[in-house]
Length: 122
Image 1 (cartoon, rainbow, N blue to C red):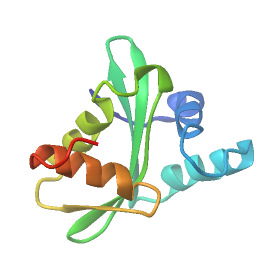
Image 2 (image 1 turned 45 degrees about the horizontal axis):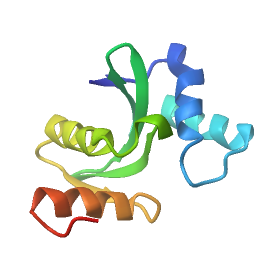
Image 3 (image 1 turned 180 degrees about the horizontal axis):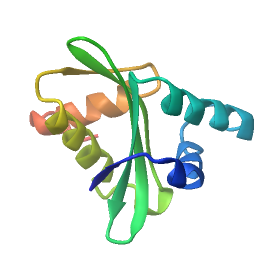
């Protein structure tokens, strides 16, 4: 289930963000969280399965698009389809907008769309 970020989830969100292949210093993670807290065009969501928060997804809104800025899944839950479910949930939330990727999220987003269209199994 996709849940909108709240300040009370800050430590959970920082932990999940630390799984992204970017600068993982505490300062960098705090700056990323600050971006989501202060910029109305940036939206951060946590993915909850049962009682556990296992993933995180962050987007930047555009006029006709949204850009997938961050996507991470706890390594203990990888390979179970949660990342794909998160992408589908955010696309369902904004059906009139096209999902775009960044350099960091591009390969994962391509993998999701290949699987949906019956493309190669990677």
